[in-house]
Length: 83
Length: 225
Image (cartoon, rainbow over all chains, first blue to last red; front, side):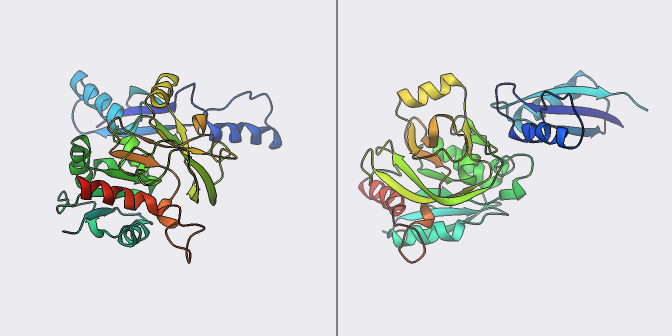
């Protein structure tokens, strides 16, 4: 089994009020020096077959049409090395 | 023949009954549609109600978009079927790309529930013909992810084509770009908005009856068609 990771983040120009709330909470907890926080989603896909270009193309298609809303989000697909 | 207006129930829909009731008060026949059933049962128009379809998992409306009933509704909407998306229904219409842009988390992060003043900017759509352009109405608003966003080019296009159908008045409740509360597609048969006209259809239960013209508008359009 192979794992493919899809990271989904709001586009830089889209306001991220959740990330801002996290950033504002940090100093109260004693964590200083963080000037910005952006919050996103991570999907871990376990693929049954080999992770070849065709499989990655399918994952990209999946990310583009479903896992991310490309109107407001960017995504990145990467293969996670076996441990 | 009675005009049949379908109201879809998804797992997690909340306002399907109120929408059906509004349809009935307007003088049409509400028809219950089911998310898992592709068949629209010969309805003349469809309402996608508010709520939290599929628990709002992934993104609001993202999973509903791929339900069997939506396949038929998307094809119908492209062919001119009047479709109204309220709140979660608006989110589904954006996720389906029947309407441009997206709804994001309210800029202040709070869920809001209040009576909201709106201006009707376009009285030419299938769902707003019984309003006057510029008319101000008050209907309930309740959402956590109602911030309308689109890129500047899309916003300019919406404005230029008169496709901003409703705008928030007094204060912007959620950070929506250009105070946009609702929009329509180029043909005007597909309308989506965050506020809830179906909760403002009779004096006993709503703050006003300002929402009723949505439902009489579509009825009139269908009867004259």
